[in-house]
Structures are given as C-alpha cells and as structure tokens.
Length: 286
Length: 162
Image 1 (cartoon, chains in turn brown, red):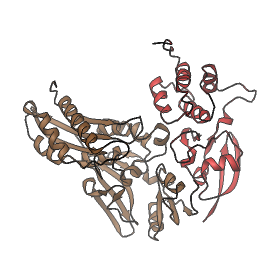
Image 2 (image 1 turned 90 degrees about the vertical axis):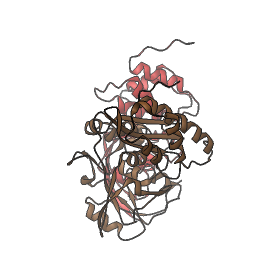
Image 3 (image 1 turned 90 degrees about the horizontal axis):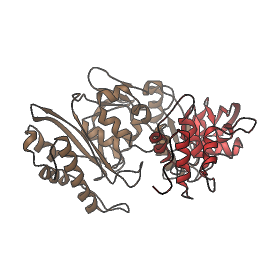
Image 4 (image 1 turned 30 degrees about the vertical axis):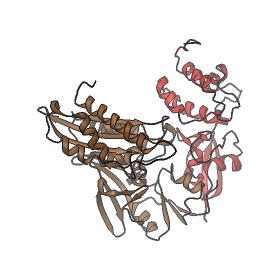
C-alpha cells in the first residue's frame, strides 16, 4: 500500500504545468482523492506527478459574460459553499453535496472529478446534462470540448495526455428552472447505483428547455436524448410520464456488478425518472 | 524518484525535513514526526481513521502527499487537549457518551468534529452527522458517537427505546 517511486513537480503557473505534461508519462495531481488510492494500490505508476494545487489561476468560481466558470482546482466544498453557483445553478450545488464525504470534498476538485470520468459520479453527469464545456490547454493550444463529446468510456475521455483541464463552463439556465436530481445509493457518499440530474424550464405551460443525464447507468454519463426530444415544446399538462420514463431508460446501458444488476438499475431508474418528472411537472402520481 | 524539503507546523511546532515525493502525509506524521495518534486504516481514503486538520480543514492524510503540506499548519489528535490534560470539547463529549470502543477510528472522528466545531462555528446536528459518514467504526459503535454529536450540538438525546 505504498506508491511506487516517482518524481514530483509543483509548478505555480499553467504554462509551467503544460511544459511538464509535454514530456510524457506524467500524471496530474489535483485533489488526489482518486489518484492517491491508485498510486497506493500501484494501479498507477507514473514517472512524474505534476501537482497543480499551487496554481492560483486554477481556483475559484466566477461569472464571466454569461454562464458560470469553475476553475478546475476549485474544491468540491468550495463549489458547495459558492453563492455564485447557488444563485446560478442550484442543481449543480445539490449534485456536489452528494460527491464523496465532507473530508474528501475538502481536497477533491471539480476539474478532477469532471476529467476523471467515473461513470457513476455526479459532476460528469451534471456537465453533460446542463450543457457544460470543458476548457483544456496544452502546449499545442487550447480548446473547449462539449461535455457530451468528452466522455468515451469508463474513466476514459477525449483528453490527450499533454492536456490540462483548466475550467468547466456551465451555460446559464433561467432562474425559475426546475431542479431534477435523484441519486440512489446504499450509503451516503457511495457512488450511485442509479443517478439522474437535469434542469427543465417551463414557459406558458410548455417545456421550453430541458437537459437530463443519467449516472451509474452505463459506461459514461448518458444524456437522455429520446426523453428530452419527446419533452421539448410539449404542454406540461399532457405529458405521459411513464412513456417518457421508458424512453429515458431506452438510452441507458447499465451493467451488472456486485452492487446491483443491470435489471435492478433499469427498474429503479424507470421509477426514479417517472417520479422526478412527475414532481417537476406537478403531476399528481398514483 | 525525487526528495523535497518541507517545512510544516504540527500542533504549533515547526518541523523541517526532507521527504521522498511518494511519502504520504499520514506516514510522514507517524514515522517522521512520531504523531502516532494519526491512525492508518485502509490507506486508500475509505475508512477516515487518518483524518487530520490541514489549514483548518479536515482531510484524509493518506490521500495527501507529505510534500503537498509544505507550508501548511497541521493539527493531529495530539494537539487538541490542553497542556494540563483538559480534554477538547469533542473528546470530552465522546468520553461522556461512551463514543468509542476499541478506539481505532476515534482520532479521525475527533478531528472531523473538531474541524467543524472550531472557533464560533455552530454546525447543525445534521451537518455533523453527515460528516460522520466519512468514518467507518468497525466496532459499529455508532450510537455512542451519535450521542456525542448531539451533546456537542446541545441537542436532546432520543429516548432509549424510541
């Protein structure tokens, strides 16, 4: 349970960090709440660990022109306490309150969780559901990657080894949007057996805008495309909640593991979705 | 493999030394500093026994490299009681409510609760209970720990057979 030897660098600028990453076989250390166990178990044996915790430019929640920008080394507990985030995207704050435990959120970062791509984690799904984009830099240049195109498999993203995630950008959602969040776990702080996050805006009784994603329901966070398409523009009073839940489940690809079977996840997911949508539409469910 | 100088303050005392990059903060505190009140359970962030306070925040010391603590102020369970032996309020509450059995998980529990109740902070019972979810007590002595939390927060205890 001791890490294999490695070299360590703690640059204080993004440029210096990118220089280290361009050399190959380097691993980025952000909050360390996943990397440290991987090192201890020797599942990860990098030759260089690049600690980005001393880069001041990678910290804080801000509101540039439209939307909300979360710098990558912002601690999960800082997002939880952020008034800016609470005002702009309350569902994101609710999601982060379910990430790990108080003690791990004191170190764990928003950018770390988003770029790790654990399929049952809250923040990757939040990014996909709410239409976030991920800002990544390398010595070769910078790019903004839509969250929906970011995840390719469990713990696998389109990031190149020399790229550093510097911020997550969330678009604005109207202040009267309805929060959609439900997570089923055996114990607080566990990864989700079934998780659902999203936001929905109603205008003149119709669904004006909707974004929903599953977590713990497949190899990546999964956008509920079919359900979204069926909801968009519809009158809130005439929605077939059960039918939409079926469409939402149709987009998932859950697996069996020692926590739950795929069938269990689908069954619970269907109910969770229907209940959450019903509540959001203010439909009385039998 | 690289070695790095570090300067840290542990329980108010300055410590300087050199550490291997891969040295975890918990191993540094125990083996280099002699602070064996830092208990190491799972060594991968699950059990919470190694929780210490770094710059005011409760963190798992097995999930931090010692070198990352360079410049930080660290409090371990050894730093809580007064020099005359008067227990910290969290320690006293756990003692009064029999909030420990074998005691292995206790330093971690103490440090989480001490961080959250430091200064003028008056967190709710719910906040403190939620923080306990980051600790595993393998004696399953949770009821005593929960009673200590209610005592700390000045909340009444539920009746015995409620």
